[in-house]
Structure formats: C-alpha cells, structure tokens
Length: 269
Length: 269
Image (cartoon, rainbow over all chains, first blue to last red; front, top):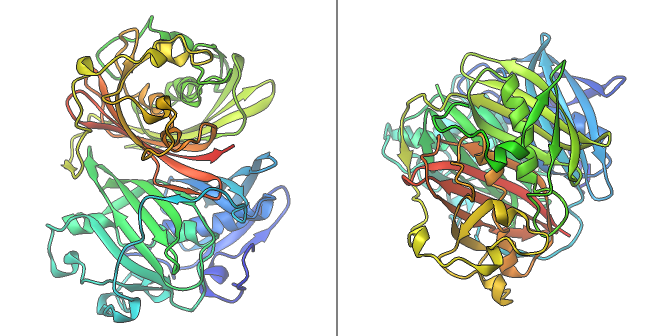
C-alpha cells in the first residue's frame, strides 16, 4: 500500500483478498456482498481484486490508468487471476490480469502503474461538484442496505443532495447526477479502491428510464492520491446510440482534488 | 470492410496493410509517412495496422471500444502483430493484439467489436462543434505538409476556423480546440480508420505551452458508422496534474452525428 492509513480488516480489503501462487497466478473468492440488483458481484469490486493481484506484481506504487473488458458476469465463489508483466520501465510499469471462473474468462484488465507522489504542473479547468455537505443530505431509505439484491448499499454510504428522479418513477431527468460516497465501515478511499469505486455509482441512465445496462469496457485514470473523507462524485451520460452509451464518472476528494476520471461503454439490454 | 465505399489503394490502407500468417500472427511494415515532430510513426497509425489484423480475426464488423497501451515508440520498418480471440459472443467479440518490433512489445490493444447497424434508442445531449464550413477556413501553411518531421500533414487535411494560438507563440490559450479533418487523398473515414484518426489531432496542451507529450493509454468508443465528408473534431484537456493529463477527442461526421469519443492519458516529458 502506498498510503498512510492502514486498510487491513476493512470489508473491501477482506473481500478483494488474493492468495499468491507460482508463475504470477493468484486465487480469490468473490463474495455476495457487492451486488447491484442482480446476484452478480459488481464489476468494480471484481476489478478491485484483479488489481490487488496485479499491483503485487508491478514495481510502481499507483495505478495511473486501468482498462477492464467485461466478458461474462462474475459469480460469488472462487476465481483464478493470472497476471502478466508487460513492461517495467523507469517511470511506469504495465501489466495485465485475466480473471477466470469455472475455466472461463470473466474480466481482462490492463493497467499502467506509476508514482503519483511525483510533482508536476497543475492546471484544473473544471471544479468538484458544488453540493451541500454530506451530513446535510438526507439518508435515503432505498440506500439503507435493505433493498433486495443490492448488497453493495451495506458496504457503501451514498448521500444525494436531491432525491434521484428514478426513485419517484420519473424517466425525464437529465442523466447527470452528483452525490457523495464513502465506504460504510470507515475505510478511507485510496488509489487501489478508486478503480473499483468508479463503478459504484447508480447508472446515470436510470434517470432516463433505462434500468438494465451491462458494462462492456471501463477505463479509469487515477489522477491523485485521495485525502481522507467523503468523495464528491459526478456520473453522467451524454450520448445513447445503437443500444450503447458512454458513462463518465468523476471523483473528487474532500479537499476538492480530482482523484479519478472514468468512462465506460455500456450496453442497454 | 463493413461500409460501402471501397478503401483499397488509399494511403492509410496501403500503409496499414497486414499479411496474415499462421496462429493469429500478422506482419506489417510501418512507413515514415505518419510522423508528428519526431521520427516515430503516430500512435493512431500504428493502432490502425494493429486493428486491421484484429478485425480480420473477429467475427463482428465494427470496433465498438478499443483500448491501446503504448509501451515504446514505434519506428518505421517491420512489425509483428500477434492476435488473440478472447471471446466470441452473440452480440460482441473481444480480442487483443500485441505489436512487436525487434522482439520488443510496442503496443498492446484490446478491443470489443459489435454491429453498429443495430438500431436502438438515440439520445444526444451535446452537439457537434459549430464552425464555419471547411472551405471557408484558411489553409495553414504550417499544415501544408512541408514541416520537417510532420509527414502526417501530407496525409491529413486540417482546417481551423481560427489560427491556433501556439502557432503565434502563445501559451495562454484554453486547451480546447475545434477543427475539421479528412484524409488528404480522398479516402472517406470509416469505423476502421476512426480509432487511428482520434490520435491525429494536434495535442490540446500545445495551447498551454506543453509541446512534448507521450501517450500512455488511448481508449476510443466508435459510436456510429460515419457518413462521407469532412469530420468535425473537438480536442480538449481539463486537468493537468503530477505530470499527467487526459486528452479527450470527439469526432462528428458531416451529418452532425457523433462517430467517435476518445480519451487518452498522456505524460508531459
């Protein structure tokens, strides 16, 4: 871990734990604690385990960019993770990880790691979402963790400044939602959890009445090591066409610093 | 080819030609006709050849999402391309391609192909750049193809509504530029050239005085099969931090349809 706050013992770390074997191979056991309206573990959660393995095989501390292709739905239970070091360079290291369950490939991720403690020019032309403080946002009963099949709501605290339109049965909202997020058990976000957390948003297309989407590919840029505290998030879709849409997710830390930018291509089903 | 207009005989197709061998292996010869201020072939051009090989190995017609990691600069000369079919599904097919030169990996790309003739819901919350027609934009001498080391300017026609600030020595512009683009020899853009063309823009960070950037990873969503004619492009950067920045590139066709969305993580050097 490249960051100060220890993460051992928290739910995310327990559930993304991997055991190392020979030749770059790892094993993991996906739990049913990270599902969203289905019995399938959330894709970000699965990626979190995959990167746990990959991060142990590369020499650089921070994931800078991660691209994950989702091939089949994951299921709770055992998984094999095969890592490959593609290139170890001076400033960056690149590798891939293949996640298999029952002999079939579920996810293939490629990532370049580097060092985000390096200082450089800073220029920011867009700001964090401007929202009331999380403690001034209502706690939604729908996100209390009692929703059938949405076990991730027990792991993640969400705070919305306004009640999302889809909860009221509306389908006319703009697919652009801002909200707060953090781990429910007090674990602080770090560079290793961010590539998972970018997939923890309720899809923006629920606001236009589309409830069934499948991620084809998810790319995340980790832009800084997050400060402790709540994360300000913005999830949005601008173009739906040919049964496909892009979904962007941006995460800022409690200091207003952009820490992750993600985009996925998803399919309406 | 999934589109109507034949592409044989054009420069892009001649220079991205691949020869098929056994076991998913192809060979190519990169030319010096696609360089940008260096002797290295443009990363989009190299990816064009890689996808030419991958597209021949997958059963679906259109690249939907492509993620390419750039590991070393390519050089003019021979290259080996090793393709792998990861999954052939009903609606999509996913594969990867490794580009090697002199025994070293230069690019690794993964892509999911599908069928963009499938109709579905259409929703568009952002419009194509509003610019004067290309014929009303001045032809810049700097893009006439006579610039040392910028051979790509002989292959691509660029039209800017306004003279870019960096050409005047300014470093205070917003890193957000809109322009027209097309192949100089009359080849029409198609789904196979778009993942290359998203990397043909002059980097937006030139507007803030940053001239030396290296692409770490480039993800492209191909959103529609383009209509013939000029392409309206928008290239922009919003965040520079820790020596890294994202660059977004959007391409609309002559009918105002979004045909490609791309984002790369790049490093200032």
